[in-house]
Image (cartoon, rainbow, N blue to C red):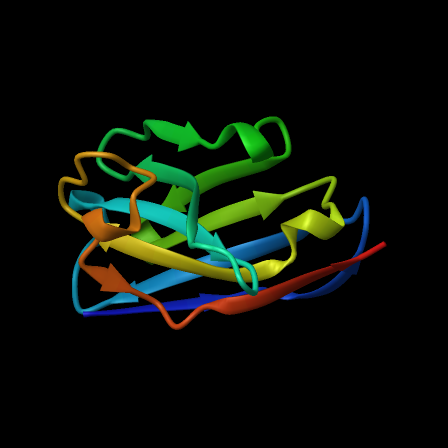
Length: 123
């Protein structure tokens, strides 16, 4: 089981990035895929989540209206579209997978994790 994030980088405030989370070794359509981020000195926080079986999505208040999660089950990939980025969005972004996370935004609910991708937003 492996998750690989990509798409991070350096962007100016107000810009956009699209992160990808590609899964191998299992099919995403039986899982919830969460996106998390961790800034230096801060705890890892849940950003968004998608139930790939029925398309239900969950979004943290801090990114609501700016970030959108989606999935392409045929490609076994989940995306996080990030628009109107702010300097406070700077963090390492991780995707994680679990069949039944009881609380979507808690990192401890997820069994499988990617290695993370850095997102840096300059003012």
